[in-house]
Image (cartoon, rainbow, N blue to C red; front, side, top):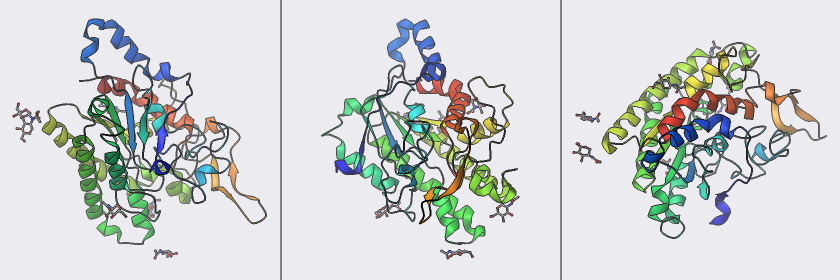
Length: 337
Ligand SMILES: *[C@@H]1O[C@H](CO)[C@@H](O)[C@H](O)[C@H]1NC(C)=O
Ligand SMILES: *[C@@H]1O[C@H](CO)[C@@H](O)[C@H](O)[C@H]1NC(C)=O
Ligand SMILES: *[C@@H]1O[C@H](CO)[C@@H](O)[C@H](O)[C@H]1NC(C)=O
Ligand SMILES: *[C@@H]1O[C@H](CO)[C@@H](O)[C@H](O)[C@H]1NC(C)=O
Ligand SMILES: *[C@@H]1O[C@H](CO)[C@@H](O)[C@H](O)[C@H]1NC(C)=O
Ligand SMILES: *[C@@H]1O[C@H](CO)[C@@H](O)[C@H](O)[C@H]1NC(C)=O
């Protein structure tokens, strides 16, 4: 089974870790005698899709292993769907120490239901996790664990690609959120103590959906549907937290954080001011070449000046900015017992 799951061990230190999460250190040192009351996660388990995948999805189907993916970090393709680090890499700094020896089960292109890719859906990812319990991970490992559950919209792009009725989308959104609830309950029941649930990012602002408007504005039709998804998701999380009597489930509000970054005029320290946030750095069929080897995409000069990398994914600088906007809420919520 090892070939299907990649051990989540990353060896590099990032200079911005203290920038993003310095506050935790501050809280802990100023309340030193309360230190042991704070939750201090040590292992990170990751479920979901390309927003969280750090290399599970393999060639030949995954563009994430092709040039120019990975040009900023680590300098060559590494299986991440970006020019560099992705959401998982930034969350990995949520504690005082790196969250080591957890595992990443996320596969690009997957959803809570089966999509057109044949990689494991979230249910199957959780099955893989369950099979490791007892042998590889003990209950005490899980008692100091954190999970990231990324549902970034592949169920919906799949639905749209099948030309199914737009009028029926709200019913489908209910199904996606219901299945997400099943998954969250299961991960918690298996023993994970803290579970991070991002809201769905504003899909209508992603280059894939703003191309027809020359990247000038977001598509409100899509964003209205995303808001519906998020309102249901927030109700689910509130219900689950009520049932557990703890702040077990933590929402990272990607939807508002993305919009805040798009509108940033320089007022958020640590968040880059992007001139054209809706325009991707890698435009066209990113990662693809024709029979003669000619690139079917155009790359911008400086990936750090772009929020979007390709049609669907933020750049490393984009993710860094999203986490900067979230950082205040994030640090306080993660250490709440
Ligand atoms: C996940 O994938 C498995 C294997 O294809 C399938 O049996 C199962 O029904 C899927 N789960 C959901 C919730 O779609
Ligand atoms: C959906 O519609 C588009 C354009 O009309 C067509 O190219 C595509 O093949 C259709 N997809 C499916 C799955 O029917
Ligand atoms: C948004 O996307 C929908 C579906 O593709 C399309 O019908 C609509 O015209 C778009 N709206 C804008 C403002 O671009
Ligand atoms: C949880 O829900 C129950 C029933 O709706 C309600 O009575 C209770 O006040 C809620 N508890 C919290 C902590 O919100
Ligand atoms: C939550 O608190 C209520 C009332 O204080 C209690 O009846 C219930 O058993 C608690 N549930 C859990 C899961 O601890
Ligand atoms: C941070 O938390 C506050 C208070 O709960 C909330 O109003 C705000 O929207 C949150 N910001 C983000 C980016 O999640």
